[in-house]
Length: 274
Ligand code: ADP
Image (cartoon, rainbow, N blue to C red; front, side, top):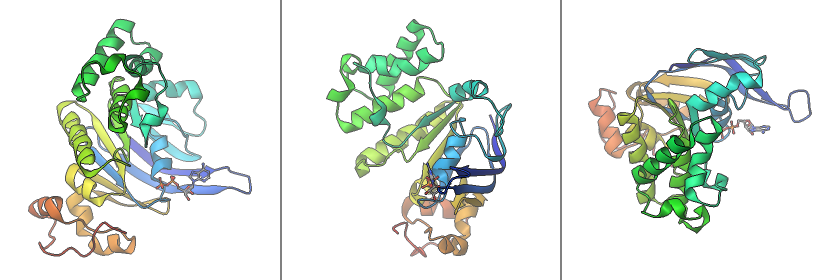
């Protein structure tokens, strides 16, 4: 399912003294089946953009195309429901949204809400609990008795149990230690490879983008400034430096080099640290 934004603008609190234009004439395409990284600094418009991907926000200008569905400022709320089923979003710190008395019910909540039969919702929940490596007996536990890392996995299972065609991840490793980060990112990569799913990762980590993505969109000041395969994007080191985005080194740097980005091996122009 291709996703495209055409001349999309978004203004918060239009017509009030707090008016703020967060997106300006954004034109991007997210290829079906790709692992796309959306990258940019805080305030560049990433989370405003991602909320357009499942109709949480409607553009104040332009068109958002999600598969066969078009969303414009005139689109009515009920027309957005099919999109919400197809596009799952794992928000930052998703564990803050857990609320049910036990893990099983929490994971079943989304599928039940979208009309999946009880038995099927339960089977999916149990499957995802196992797939995400949660210990046996987790299903009956209160989510609030779990560790932080386990709570995050439960929240992610809740989105995956919807079996979305498109999975959007908003800084999914925020607050995790390096080992936990790698585990979760590797898991998303495996899921991406195994399921016929488009994965969209919103991140400020150039390293993660280089390591996992096959397509990149760089945002700066509410505009899409660069998009294409990572090899091409990273080859534009001069412009990236203008936007204070460094080219990563280490394993992914090597991978890009091998893929022909044309970057010389050796010390990078910049690190990703700001
Ligand atoms: P990012 O996710 O890249 O940090 P955002 O999409 O959150 O960027 O923000 C883009 C711009 O929109 C920023 O200038 C931010 O301050 C502004 N903004 C975000 N949310 C709101 C809001 N609810 N009301 C007003 N302005 C907002």
